[in-house]
Amino acid sequence: MLNVALPKGRLGERVYSMFEKAGFPCPSIRENNRKLIFENEEAGVRYFWVKPSDVAIYVERGAADVGVAGKDILLEYRPDVYELLDLKTGKCRMAVAARKGFRDDMNRTLRVATKFSNIAGEYYSGLGRDIDIIHLNGSIEIAPILGLSDVIVDIVETGTTLKENDLEVIETVIPISARLIANKSGFKFKSEQIERLMESLSEQIEFEESGKQ
Picture 1: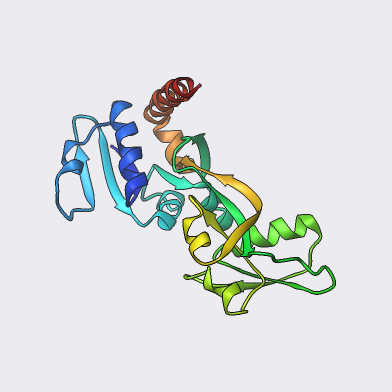
Picture 2: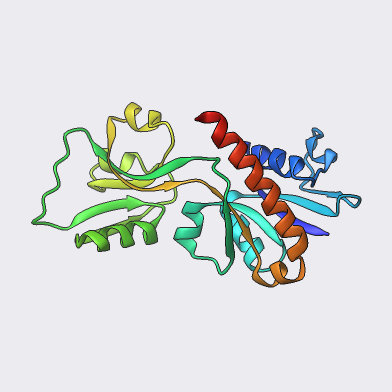
């Protein structure tokens, strides 16, 4: 049985469709219920829904053999897993945003509000910029408005929330997308199933990408 951790929400639903096409279907997952674990013994697969930021933990600890996690989670928490494939879905970017008209004063420490302290720290370290990281867990956008920070580092998808709060992207840190990850020991013992899954997913991605060109 291949154990698969899927992120709850739209991304997980999109990814499940890819797994289904790859030969790992589980029809019960599409039923309207509150169950979190779904099995298909014939296909040899068990899926479970978890919070997106927890997928990597389930995979790293071996509760799941494979899972799907955003590149942001992998960069921020650095789980000890194999990153197997860029699924080219769930695309967005990690970006620096500030109030409109903001100018960085290089003579003083830059105050950065973020949920992604490690990513922000590494980014600004690479620029040689002295920063003060303010770790927040939600409502990042109001930090510059209330004077708590100069800038924020956060995931930006459409930019609508930023615009509604009079903020704008001033720098892109890194592109983000969903990645297929695997438990290191699970990969050894279930390599045939996982490699078959990877091959089919790669074919789907190539087909989708070629259709966009």
